[in-house]
Image (tube, rainbow, N blue to C red; front, top):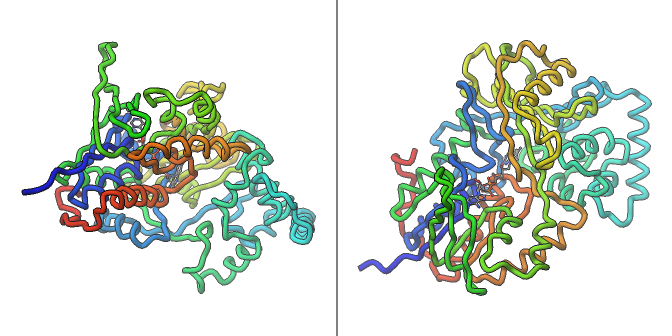
Amino acid sequence: MSSKKNKALIIGAGPAGLTAGIELLKTGNFEATVLERDNVIGGLARTTEYRGCRYDIGPHHFITSSEKIETWWKDLMQGDFLEHKRFTRIYYNNHFFNYPLEPINVLEGLSLWECLRCMVSYIRYRLFPIKKVRSFQDWVTNKFGYHLFSIFFKTYTEKVWGIECSQISSDWAAQRISGFSLSKAIFFAFFGRFYKKNKPRTIRDDFYYPSKGAGTLWEKAANWLQSFEGGSVHLNQDVVSLEHDGKKIVAVHAQDKRSTSGVQTLARYDADYFFSTMPLRTLIKSLDPLPPDIIINAANSLQYRGLITVNLIVNKTAICPDHWLYVHEKKVKMGRIGNMNNFSMGMVDHPGHTALSLEYFAFVGEAFWLKTEQELVEIAKLELEKIGLLKADEVLDGMVMKTAEAYPLYDEHYKEHLSTVLNYLGTFSNLELMGRNGLHRYNNMDIAMLSAISAVDKVLEKEKTVVRPVDATIRSSAL
Ligand SMILES: Cc1cc2nc3c(=O)[nH]c(=O)nc-3n(C[C@H](O)[C@H](O)[C@H](O)COP(=O)(O)OP(=O)(O)OC[C@H]3O[C@@H](n4cnc5c(N)ncnc54)[C@H](O)[C@@H]3O)c2cc1C
């Protein structure tokens, strides 16, 4: 006779939520229900189709140093995983700089005077570094010198974050560009091919991509999850409250977003364990009863940067050879262009067209955020013409996606607020936090997945479930 299974309730069908569900179901000792507020799978890693073209929320490349994660992805994609060598450039001052920086290319793009200023500033900060490194600006200046920082880091970073680099925590630089230094960049520019394995993550140039977009991998993951007995994913279920008794979460209540009656009918889901990838600021405010004011204030201080992607269909090919083109130029507002054709021709409706995705950053509610789809498409067309990539009338059509909580913000004070929030949530013995916004960590997909695996391991440890008895191979029905 089989013993009763534990019930797990997972908030969010993004990479972390789906990974947690699958890893729990593999044990054979859990049922896993995933609730997703949107009507699509994949969270920030979804892919959306528009008139035959396909767009991620910013093209998502698959890269990891974890063998486990790489195997997970490859097993799921069953060969439909294109392998690419990354090609990325920075557009600045009417010149395209290869990224990672290459000495000769930098010399070509900057005047001799500018190069000299970079060298002097680099040596100055290597010899006399800023002692108390607080901000992103301090951290990068110490590594590269102020002049290189101001050319290659300042404008783009400030476009993304919407605050000055001196107000961004140094944690962000340490997390995103750790292991990277000018000397290493130059070393890898010349000798990189001989030392592929030891390349820092920021300089790795090989990656995988599913032929029909990043989101297809997560759709397959959702199918895989639902192929297990007791595994289910429910879309359009917005978790609006988490009922608790002070020590444990008892149930969550979800609003069906398809409901048009105006009557709020909440579905109640109880469980033994709860896993959350929802943004911490919302999670705290959804607790029922509410936590003390000090916790709510800390959660309210956690900020997010919104992303607007303007996705265009262009009646032209060979616009740029890049996967991503970083636009540091101040004369335009766009921050990055993703050329979907270069990820996969499966992303474009016609071989004579290009699917371009332009990234703009804004805080929710600010004037730029409130612009209409038509206004944003017009701005994007004009900006592409301004930087000389194409003529505005070569754009056939466009659509806009707005993502409110795309980037958990690392401002100067986020750490104190985050630790207040995490300490409080840590008092619930059956609540596990994971993923990007679920931990307020600027994570890529692989790290979000690893955080889910570690959340699951914690629960298995509590349950002393060490065996994974179920046949966990991916069933053909899931693919
Ligand atoms: C522009 C951009 C480019 C990126 N590029 C890459 C890349 O190239 N490679 C890479 O590896 N990573 C990339 N990332 C990061 C990647 O998207 C994330 O690491 C990953 O999606 C995090 O997974 P997650 O499950 O933690 O969170 P999410 O993907 O945010 O998923 C969380 C899910 O929870 C749902 N949810 C939230 N609140 C509720 C609620 N109340 N009720 C129900 N559901 C809820 C959301 O709708 C969402 O579907 C990029 C991110 C951005 C923004």
